[in-house]
Picture 1 (cartoon, rainbow, N blue to C red):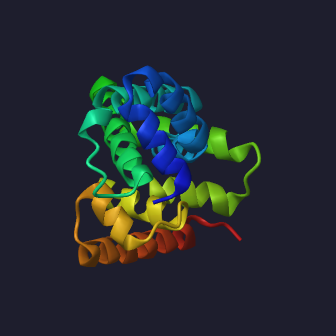
Picture 2 (picture 1 turned 45 degrees about the vertical axis):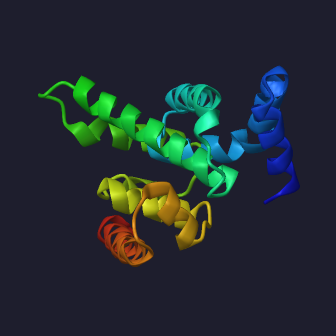
Length: 183
C-alpha cells in the first residue's frame, strides 16, 4: 500500500479527521478519476457532476472499504458505476425520435476537435460505439494503463474475459478508423 493511501485511510477512519482525509483523497485522486469519468461521459460538466457524486459516495461508504484491494481500485469502481448510471440516465432522457449517437458524436467532435487531429476524433468516436464492457476495459487499459488484475477488481470480470474484451475493442476501433479515415 502506498504511504499516501495509508494516511488517507487512517484519517478517514477517525471521525474527527474524516473531512481532512476526504480533502487529501480528493487532492490525490481527483484528476485521475475525472479523466476516467470524462472518457466515458465526454461532456465536461456532466463528468464534473459524476466526479462529485463519486466523492459523495466515497465519503458516505468509506466504512465499507475492506482494504482487500488498492484504494484507487475501489475509487475507480465507484467512479465507473456512477458514470454508467449517468450514461443510463442520459439514454433514458433521449427522445425516441432522435438518433442516439448523433448527440454523442457531435459532443466528441466538439470536445476533442478543439485540439485534436482527425485520428484522435475518430478514435474517440470508435470507442463510444463499443459495447459498455469493451469500452470500459479499453479505456482503463489504454488510457489509464491499469493492469488486467486491477481492472478485474474494478469491473468484477475475469482477467481472461478482460483480455478478450480488450482485443475485440482494439480490433473494432482499428476497423472503425480504417473505414472512416479520409486520406
